[in-house]
Amino acid sequence: MSMTSTTTGLPDRYRPLDQVGPDEPTSTGVIQCWRAKDRVLNRDVAIRVHTPAGPAAHAWISRALTAGGLATPALAMVYDASEGIGGGPGGEPVPGGAAYVVNEWIDGETLGTRLARGPMPDREVRTVLRRLAEGVAEAHRVGLPVGGLTPDNVVLRPNGLVGLRAVPAATGTIDGDIAALGALLEACLTGLDPSRPGVRRLTGPPDLVALVRRARSTEPGQGLSSVAAMASLLGERSRPGPMSAAARAEETDSGWLRRLRDRRPDQVSDHPDGGAPLNTVAVDGDAVPLDRQTMPPVPPVRPVTGTPVAPGALGGDTVTAGSVAPSGGAYAGSLPTGPRTGHDDDSLHVLDDDPGYEEEDGAKRHKLVVAGLSLLALLVVVALAWWLGKGVISVADGVDETPGSTPSASAPAEEPDPAAGGGPTAGAALPIAGGDVFDPQGDGDPDNPGDVELAFDGDAGTAWSTYEYRGSPAFGNLKDGVGLLLDLGSAQDVAAVTVTGSPGATAEIRTGDSADGDIDSFGVAATGELGDGTEFAFDAPESTRYVLVWITGLVPSEGGFSAGVAEVAVQAVG
Image (cartoon, rainbow, N blue to C red; front, side, top):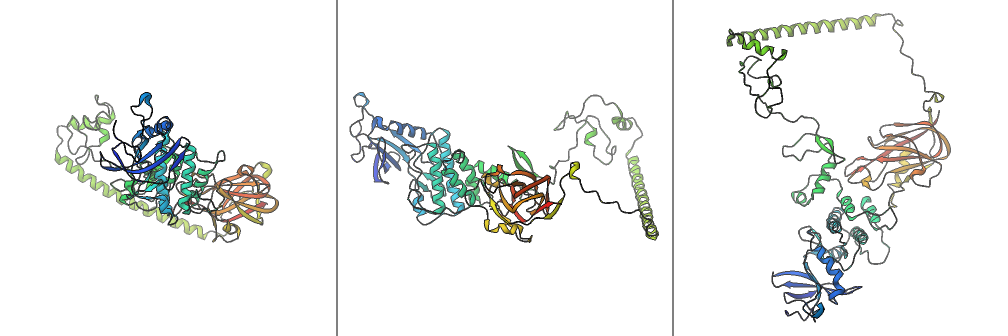
């Protein structure tokens, strides 16, 4: 039996240097963490020691062995693990032995130390939490909850990456990991340790605030389904400017695909040859840009045939590729290779059977063709001059005609008759008593509520706008929509609603008798795209007090996606 360290009961291979962090009590014992030197490989390691050893540490050691199969920079690697059972009779723990897990030692500043200086910038928050969530998601894929997701265990590596010490914790659950990542995201936004009591105001980008609430929610149907979903939402953000070489090298494959799907039409292709403005095709249900203005370049190919053809047979020294079947090369087999029959080959037979054909005849024929084209161009010019002169004379004759002799303009189309099945006739605009932001799926921070009245102040130069959402025009995949709820003061008969707003944004006009309730309590009266005075005409008159302009799709903005409403007019039945 090898000698062990008298300090921790570890094998002589590991020489403890100093204890890291406080003792961690668990249901099966106490875990201490040490920074130690691996004498064999001459490197620093982190060793966590479980007291007592033996069967009490079996579950923890089993989790560590599972973690040993992971390879992700976001989680400290597991080098070694032991329950501390040696050569004692019956397999009992060796006196002085220890159950331990040996982890990679991660150098850097802990997240807790960094947050002591205040909140982190939004971009850094997204990067740190996304990389950490991707690592935890890898553990979840093999059925391993990680645990221990605290600011003191998360280390910001010097190379810009992030790592989690103490992998795995003594206990943990997948739901607990999701909630812990939400708490870390909140801590990064506020600069405050979420484990400390007290009231804190959660501020920051709307999508990150909503993500915190979803990650920490315990309400059925409101929380996140997985850590992988959290990583995806953190990675789906717009990238309006070019990326640096370092940032490009740090991106994952999934991040590259998201950039490809989110690329705007005015961006340039990443192809080495450059590219023109881009079009899109569907790949995996998403729009992927392609070149919209040019066809792929086609190299000049001269098919090789088995029958010699005179250079001037078809004009010049080239052959029409579609008329001669290639006998070899890339295009072989594209046309029938059997005996030629029919009118397609008559010209070739005539040339083959003419013994008196010489190059001089080809030159003479070329001169005749040039002369004929010149004569034809002259005839075209004469015809155009005659046609233009006739048009001028016709216009002059029309001016000299007696007033009143021309046919009268056609009468305007009759207004649709509601009784005959058409929509109701829109009349005067109804007064709007007030309005509010309708955001039933939001996070309690509605989109610009102070600007609502700008949407019906009679001035199209002022507008209410949604927040800016990143990653997707579907509100960053955080909710189905957001709207303006307009109060008419009392029930009115409404025929249409005219909206001036962001061109291309999609919307529904809904009606209801109460301002309370969810989106399904408002019936859909009309749908369409916003524009300059778009009229949403109802199929039938609606008697309603509340009109909801429900925005369902956003349009690209400077840093993501948003939509604005400059003016709304609710029109009564005429």
